Amino acid sequence: MEFLLENILNLIGFLVGLGIGIMSMIGFRNTGSPTLFRLTIAFFSISIGFFVIWAGYMAEDFVIKAGNIERWIQTLGIAIQTVGYFFIAFSHSIKSFFPKSSYFRSVGIFPLFLVSSVQIEHIFRSVSFILLAYGAIETMLSYFENRNKGAISVSIGLALLALGEFLGWYSFVFPESILYSVSMTIKIGGLIALFIPVSKVPLTKIKFDEGLE
Amino acid sequence: MKIIGDILSTTRDDLQDEDGATVTYLIRKANISHSRISRILKTLVSQGLLEQVDSQGSNKYRISPTGREFLQAYYKFTNFADNFGLSI
Image (tube, rainbow over the protein chains, first blue to last red):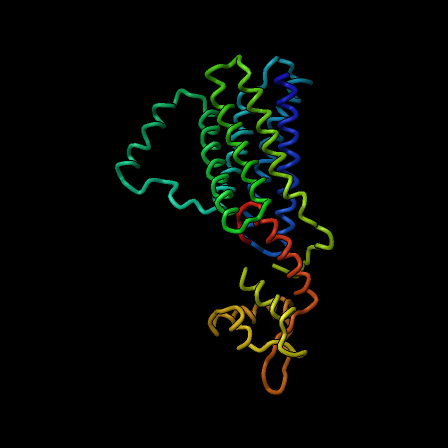
């Protein structure tokens, strides 16, 4: 069950990321907008991240058959996705990502030593959670400004991805529980919510003009 | 990017006469300084998005077919970016 859900999640993630990434790229090439460039990087990263994990599961299922996916493949995929989530948050211009006070900056280094034994995958998951939560809040705030209904769907999508990421990270405390399956189901819902408003953007009659920079 | 959209939409939808819009009129619509709009207009003309027309001794600007295509794409992707709570 978990294996099937993992495959569905990664395949949907790959396709949704690719779809939104291609749309952002068409937008960037037509308008030269830096925002659309950042979204292109974000969604291509997310798509590649999901693809890496999906390919890992496929290789495990059909070639290696060791009963478990290689840990480093999962970590690599999650790390690439985190880069994508960073660019979504970055598009909302992170104003105070790092603490300004030198005291807090010095304290901030300690956790790196304290969690050195924890697998790096959990660090990426927790960073992803923060970035996704930030993106969800900023998108919801923008809805209150311009009342664009699509922003609600994107905000809910990012929030569900954040919740899924949190549960996925938390499930290492209870490895055999249903938490991981719930996390993946929530993330699938998040990806679908993310794609709904984007699928409504009409792309007819748009063509790339070579003369535009 | 928004200023470019405003200038192009003014030269498409809100012309004073058939020859095009004057710099003064565009300054009023886009609400920016003369030196800044001059640089933007120069770029838009060099990119082929605007056409410069010499009308009774003064320069006027009107949108080109490429500019119309750009403006159409601009509106569509503004809507796309709005969904993410962003502006292009």
